[in-house]
Image: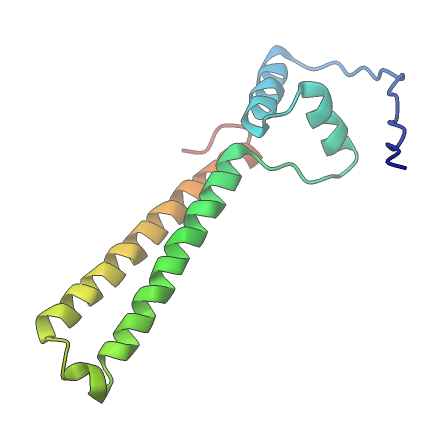
Length: 128
């Protein structure tokens, strides 16, 4: 009943000559992506998406910060309603605004890191 799909056996080997620096870059990118060099080259040659561990970690971090901003924004909106003003002090509202600003700064920082990683990968390691 539970039959596995027959796996495609890869028998054909393709060669490509590269310089030492190109080889180093390819090996480094494969390592960043958590892939073998063969798998990386196959995916790139076939036009498939290749994501690095940095891409995935940065994306997850951005999602978490974005969720924090959403929660803090909701709290601020509630704090500004007439009902909440009876309970929330001006000091608590200022603290909430500071938390929002901190998350915004964290988001900007993560975006800069992500941008550098992407630019660095696309330019072959020359961007700083």
